Picture (tube, rainbow, N blue to C red):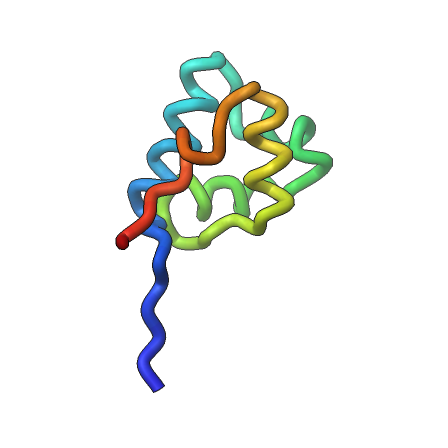
Length: 76
């Protein structure tokens, strides 16, 4: 069985990082805002090694008052 991700993890991660940095927030501050999500996990998301959970995406977008379309990039 072939496994294809439909989310472009690298570009999605870049988008998350760009939003965080445009708001002058460190990864440590992001960890606090995201209810204790570990710093290393945030780093993995931002570097495209891990696709975030829906809960993370929703919380992130709600905090920054942005649309999911502003961060998630589809390969389709």
